[in-house]
Picture (spheres, rainbow, N blue to C red):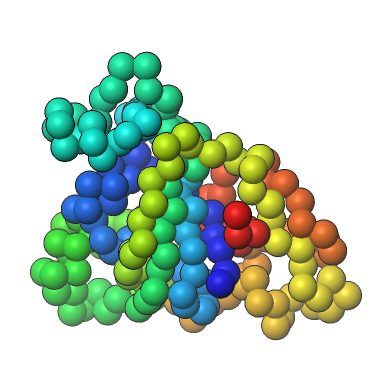
Length: 196
């Protein structure tokens, strides 16, 4: 199964962990499903506290805060499997999609059009989340490795590491490397990584 490292803001991670959000809407998505998603918590926004037993803390106190808990921001805090990624027709967005993604129609529209390359983003993708696993101890970026280029001697036109952006494609990894190499920076959207 392919695996990716995806950046998500803390406010959306909280909704994913609580089960309120089971669809992640993205401008891009890997070509093939299923795929594993390692969730990188961005450093922007509020702090994401990661108690050792997050679900128990939430159930017992109704709070995400836990004294002396590690902060999840800037770390990989969870993983899930995406069994299905489907294009969303912005003209016919139904209320179920909005409810399951935790977005309003305006938030969805603003997200899709908030990009200088918006002409390429004809339709976003709805990633259906399953098999969520929240880590007791968040993982560091350096624990993950980029995939090596599958055909370093050839052009990237047919590279399996390309992903869809509407009808436009572009590579999101450094081409030409023939061995896995450590992830040192958070992805802007997502990058392919070796499965742990």
